[in-house]
Amino acid sequence: MFNPPPEIFENPRDYYRNPWIFGILIIVVIFIFIVMYSLESPPQFLTDPFLQAPTENSVQVVWFTEFPGKGHFVVYGENLNQVIEANTTKLSRTREDQDSRVGKQTEKGLIYQQPIMRNIWRHEAKVIGLTPNISVPYRIISEKENGENMRSKIFTLAAKPTPGRPLKILLTSDHQLKPMTSANLQKVTETFDKLDAIFFAGDLVNIPDRASEWFDDNRGNAFFPNLQGRANYQLEKNGTKTIYKGGELIQNMPLFPTIGNHEVMGIFSMKTSLNYQFSQPYPRDAAKYLDRQNSTNINPDINWLKNNSFNTDTYQEIFTLPQNGSEKKNYYAVTFGDVRLVVLYITNIWRVPRLDDNARGKYRERKKDFDNPAEWGYGQHIFEPIDRGSEQYNWLEKELASEEFKQAKYKVAMFHHPPHSLGENIAPAYTNPIQFIDRDENGNITMIRYEYPQQNDYIIRDVLPLLETAGVQLVFYGHSHLWNRFISPSGMHFLETSNVGNSYGAYVGDKKRNIPLDYQEKYAEIGNPNGLEPIIPTIAPLLDEKGKPQPYIASNDITVFSIFETETGTVSSYYFDTRKPNSNVVKFDEFKLRE
Image (cartoon, rainbow, N blue to C red; front, top):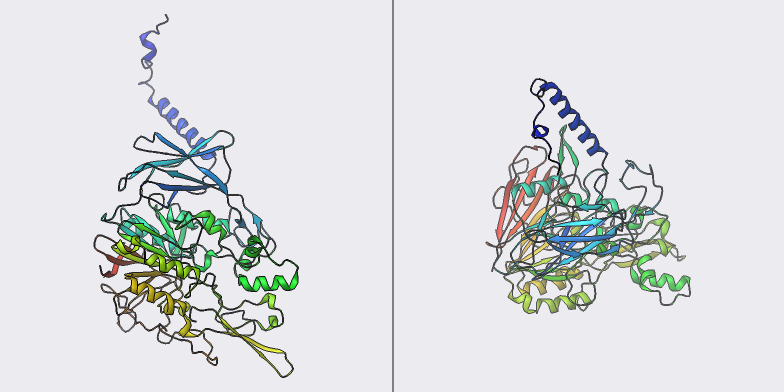
């Protein structure tokens, strides 16, 4: 047997006499390591994992890649010794186009001149056997075709919490890659060490079929990076540039989203821009009628109908929503700890409020389109009925009568369109547009206009009475990009906390909405047309130039977030002034839900 002599483990005699040689060797090794590290391929997970649809003993783990891979796994447990294989699907409508900011395309049309499909794979694993209220470490592993394994950092997951467990829940909406969103979410995680869930009231991105808005917009503030602490967005205020990273949130807590108007795509095309397609949703009945006029296709299938009207396919393919029944819907209810969350699909297409001849808007059609129904916009038409007798309304009635709902300590309804607001989008009423076509004595069309009778507002007339009778304590929504809140005479609270990334203003005082003054209906220029007065924040309201407290925040410099704490039943709102990057977050409002 060969035994090496002891001196082979000893330092050479000249080592201590020549320390500069050792120093040079260390520098060379460090240099080689840096070079090798810089040459490594960048991480190829499109996202970190995020959590969806927890149950009493399980939770879904989801992530995305740009390769199908040989296998995808979640490893979890105290020693990461349990393994679940993921199911893989491919997103069907994600694309990039001339308006994308992705890769080396830093300006319009630099690489893409029209839409092109982008291959993205979704991986989902159901982690089972969990104990409520116990967090478990986990990571994801994806094996590429060449055998290389990619591993994420270690995060934590959990099943649904049990009733009585204190929770902190982030209330947010209307991110849309807006300038202050990364700062907002970074301040959330700096203010709260641990949150338990996110309720998201719609408008997650701008164009739902544009992949980079979800995953890797090169400006650094796409949807997933913002919510996973991987953003890299430079915000400039008063000559000072600050980089914000967003917050590491959804890797460790479930996200419960709802559909806003920006989750709905219009008529599908591989020629027109994605922006144009988004602005071209067509009412389903109108699409069927035009098809009957122009073809022999008497009963178009669902794919034809979606391609020629509107769809929410990308939203549905990205998220795993809790399901109440076998059919996949865009509305649902779920119990999470002491909260019964009822999520409704209440949104319509947003149209411009302009009244000039070139406006394809809320209140009129473009003059050049009068004789071409295929180009009509049909006003602010509603995507999913919620009026009395509709399928969604009937589902809501059943949900509000359920034992799960009745037994919950806190009952929260979440949807996108505002029932009460000082913002622009509260007008006109949330109802199906009534079309009026005016003609001259020769039968020529002189105007196509749309009216929205205030008394037919479906949210106010049909939905809120149901919620109020059932004892809902909080109605949470977005859409107008501001913070304001209201309370009904019975004590039901209304909160719009959508001044996250930017604001479109509060319509009070001299700031007036662009509305028609000579139409049959009367439309509100200022204030909340649905009667309730806004509540002045209880702790630190912002002041106007005369020192008067303001019942809203509508700012492109100040970003707002709200937290629901179930231990006390309080909803607290905080703001951060991005003009002062070293300033503290300010708690400016708090209210308590009735039990």
